[in-house]
Image (cartoon, rainbow over all chains, first blue to last red; front, side, top):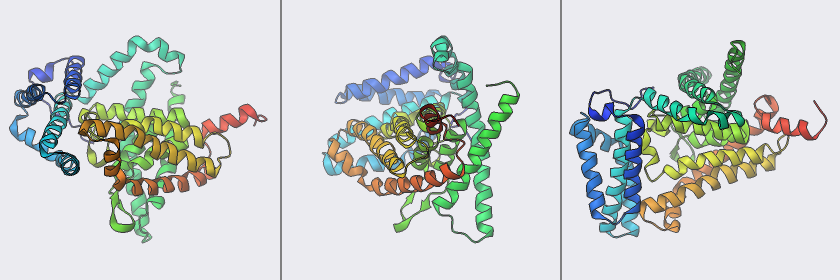
Length: 202
Length: 183
């Protein structure tokens, strides 16, 4: 599992996670509040372009991002051309694209571990009310790291199931694949819970 | 919970299984329905929240390896976020009694897994694209058959699983012991 993050050393990379997140959130909000405003749109596109160039992702990286979004563009454009005028369509598509690209910039320039750490820091002040409902900052971050670890485990379960099916010449119907996957995952979850309990984690 | 969040993620990555008519669909929303049905409302919705936190943190866990904050800025954000109340409702209805009743599983899966998700997804899509709700609905009709098939699979999996392997269905089992005689 390869995170979408791209290592680098630009100002954007070194910005605190919270500030970056807030900036993107405000930009997205502005884009959807002033949806008919050409200037807001141009400002955001300028921010996107300068951001990508500044972060060392470059034009090539921007084009790669756009290529990733090719289906989004198709899905956005075709139906709108049916219902709306071409002008409105262009406006809408470019607005959505700008916001998505800006959000992708956050993902590109922020390490997953930094985001998770920031998330934990944000949870810490509200630890007490969390405890009242049976949660805590530690438990949440434990669950998050368990999830990351489980993805390759479950993928290996899937590989096992496929191999067994192939050996018996079975067609992989969704039902015949998901059922053993479910049982294996649930059993693995139980074993993990036992192992955690044995180590004193409740 | 963590395991199920990972399971939903993996279901989104599996090679889309071509169903009748050759329409490839991913099984990610099947995972959402199963999360609610198997884990119950709280832990089911919790698994989806975990998944979304990791997606927002930049891991490519959604269908076809998409992820990152961009997912929550795009026009389909409402659908992804709708999974949270969706899984909750699936769990609430499906696990209202123990042993599970077939009609409850069917109602829960259809209401939570399809209706709630669409109810959250369509307004966001309509707003983002500047369409009306009816137009947005029309666009998404193409996905409805796939979702119905996934609901059927979820129901066909939940019922036998509850009989063969009742351990994870804690919400429903606790309800029974709190009302009826102790185990």
